[in-house]
View (tube, rainbow, N blue to C red):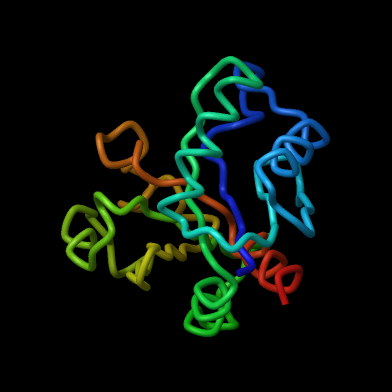
Length: 176
C-alpha cells in the first residue's frame, strides 16, 4: 500500500524542527520502502503492508524517541489522495487570487457535521467536507474575514493538519 504520512506542526516557529533526512531514516527503520519526503512541512510518501491503525502509533512513537517531542501523524493512502484531488474543483487554487487549503482530519472529528462547527460566510468563502478532510476556498482579499480561518486555536483545530491545495496535488502526483 502506498501512503503519505502528514506530520502536524513540524518545522514551524523553530520549536519542532525535524530534518527530512533523519525522518527518512526513521521510516526505513520502521520497515517502510520507497520513501520520499516532499517539502519541509512533514510529508512522507512510502509503501508498507501494515494498516494505518498499526503504523500511526509506531511512527508517532519513533518520532518522539528520535526528536524528543510528540508529533501527531495522519496517514492517507493513494486512493484517498487521488479521490480528494478529483473532488476538489480544478479552479480552486492557491495563488495570488485565492487560497485553498485541505484540512486533514483525525478520526475523532472526521464526519460531515464538522461543517456545522464552522461559521462560513457564503458570500466570500466555500467549505466542503470530503471524507477525511475539509476543503476551504477563499479569495485572498477575504482571508481574514472568512469564518474558516477562525478555527485556529479552537479545540478541534488540534485534530487536523493543513496543506495547501498545490501541495496536495503534488503529493497525488508523487504517489501515482
